[in-house]
Figure 1 (tube, rainbow, N blue to C red):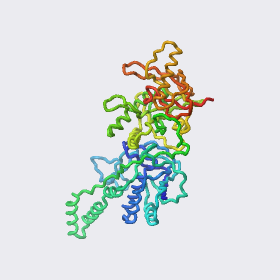
Figure 2: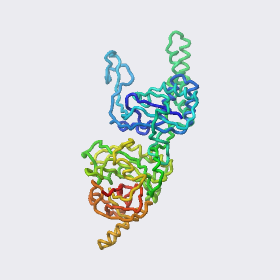
Figure 3: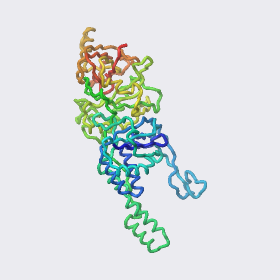
Figure 4: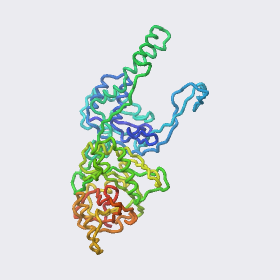
Length: 526
């Protein structure tokens, strides 16, 4: 068993998600990607003499399966613009410097705006755990030597202490490699990673260029000076050799450990119970919170943003994200659903939105799931016009608020028999019955059909109602109606569902199930 410990000495992590580098919109990378830790070890190796035994240890490490992680919860900090001094340069009277160095007025130091993604950690230590890694004493010693040389992981302000930890130091891990249930996609090293980093670091050329520069500026040996200048021009064109930014494109899906009781099966829908949850944060705008009636606008804007980021993906993944096939028609199979998460079901509930969740089809191919998760991770902000700008922050804590917990909405794994809608069910067709009682029976049958249509057993009882059984949910007439293809409005209603056996969600039913309507949540009869 191999365990690497990482202590963040300042109590925060400063590292940016690799695909979130747009100024002002950077998001901190957490949990730490195993690839970033590997790159820190490789950098320590390159910069301290490249000991052969350390190289062999790194080659062994990159050959291992991805590690499990024990990572504390993190709270992202607001991204703040800092004005950072850059390299010194001679002062120019015609172009006054941004800041004169008081002790040396002939030098000026411009300040450039920079933003840094940071997150405060609940605890300062994280662990990477390879439970089945048989490590020998020589490799362990080389890794310990490398760890002792690592001073940062991420930005230069993200100072760390790293060591080979004893197995008894680590409690239960909270993230494990699992592509089928993945909630996160983290970069990991693989065979060939060290060789690629060596090529990008380009140590031999960098050291050769630096040595020639020293000789070219040394007046003690004119012949050596001329020769050095000649070689600098011939070999390097008088330009420093290229060093490429380290990049690792191998991703691994990670999920929370599965409890033993979760392995039992209760009937479920065609949707995965592993919701991808985002907290909703106000960035600007006239309202302090959005209510459930804003669901349609919010979800539609989120879908548009996700589709725009799916352009480089496969046709299949674009279809899963957009819900439309290559011909532009609706996809005839389960695809990505987007749902609101609201403060409901409590005596003080007011129905305001606390978050959003992405719901993936159950049994999605691991590679397709990986691509969809990466697309979801790229949208961090929604611009809603008059409703302002709202941020999406991935909810990864071990103890999230009740209404941001997937099991609150899915009853996974035990299931539940009683469910009630939080957003109304949009009817698949217009009811034809004239008699009030017959109308209710027709609508109830339509909603029961919608349940079987997503793979659930037929409910024992369906009650179509103007109001939800959950406290804090607005009545159905407050929600905007969905439009049909002919421009007319779809009717909708809240519903109470009673099943003859426990079922697990997500329970998304009706014509608007992919757009935030027809979302049912477990309901307990008091």
